Length: 126
Image 1 (cartoon, one colour):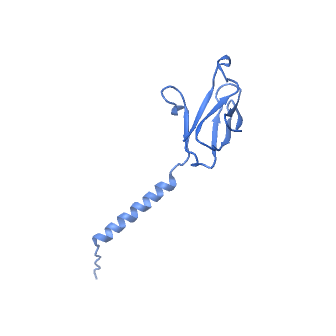
Image 2 (cartoon, helix red, strand yellow):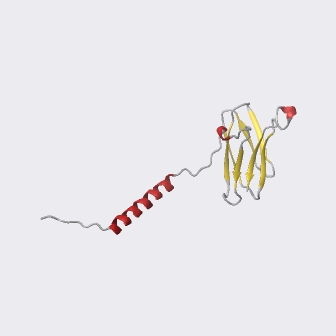
Image 3 (tube, rainbow, N blue to C red):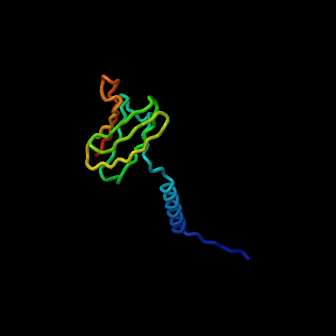
């Protein structure tokens, strides 16, 4: 006894669409949704700028790793966010922008030219 299967064109099309949806779902759920800014993300002038959109995040965790110097206390201008970066350690602070603008991360050890600075980072909220 031979069994015959008839495959219609619409069955192939439905199977292809279903397979595409499954693959798209797998890709979406396995994507890394975190935003990372590293030293290699600096522009040609050496300045690193983080761009964010107001309301896109409820809060953002900024992770800063200490490379040089023993201690670098800092604050984010226009907010009450303060922290201290220590050599060889990671400092994580929570930043929640309330409005659009440019927020400066200012190192208190190097605030101006007299103290071998300024050491400033920028967070741009659009």
